[in-house]
Amino acid sequence: FIAWGLTHLFTGRAAFLHLGAITATIMSANVFMIIIPNQKIVVADLIAGRKPDPKYGKIAKQRSLHNNYLTLPVLFLMLSNHYPLAFGTQFNWVIASLVFIIGVLIRHYFNTVHARKGNPHWTWLGAAVLFMIIIWLSTVPKVLTGEPKTSAASAAAQVYIASAHFPAVRDTVLGRCSMCHTEEPVYEGIYHAPKGVLLDTDERIAEHAREIYIQAGRAHAMPPANVTQITDQERALLVAWFEGAGK
Image (cartoon, rainbow, N blue to C red; front, side, top):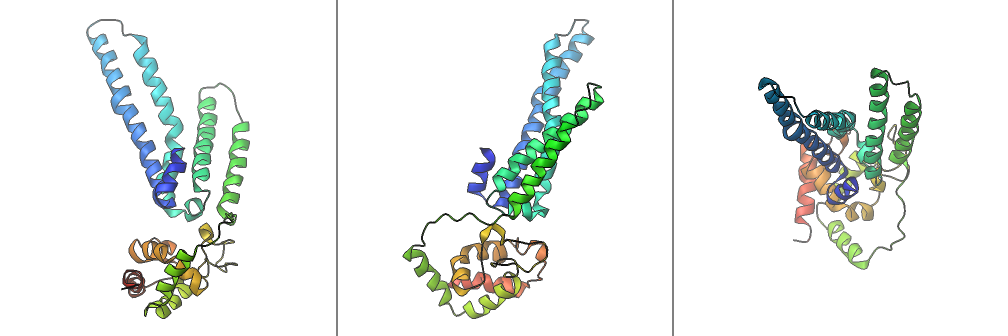
């Protein structure tokens, strides 16, 4: 539910980073608020010659085990900024949830083997199946909602099309973005437009003016790693287009 909520508050990229930060905060809290204080209590009892209460060790061990299982998911989430196929889809919250399950399965295998309690090979099968599901979710096209476009949206789009900057903006978007954001992407490895966003016509470019402004104009998040080498002048053009529309 946290992953779902974050993806509805932030972009996929930001949601993954926030989810990673929340998980890391929980892990840190386990250490500084439970594990270390309990250890100090046990050490103090030993120094004083008292028999330590075993409950403190059990609680600390439990929280340490929790952190152990969260290690792989938090690493992926904090590095997810480099993997747009993970967060650039409408199913990004599902992918984030599956990453947690995969991380737990992998850690369970190693924990069990290291404790000499067996060799649960089934965990790898489960992780592989979930990973294949993630691959599928990251490439499936956007599910059509069937909601008709409102006249207000069309009217707003016309404002951006009427801008004096639009001809240059259209050339920039078609040259830097539409190889992925089109019905049939031509960029290698991209089979469907990321997040279902299409930027191959005047109307579609105008409908996504705000996203273009934020992701390519202000945040420089798109194109990923600037693979199409969009220039600073072109980014400034996108900003001027969006901010100046309708004025």
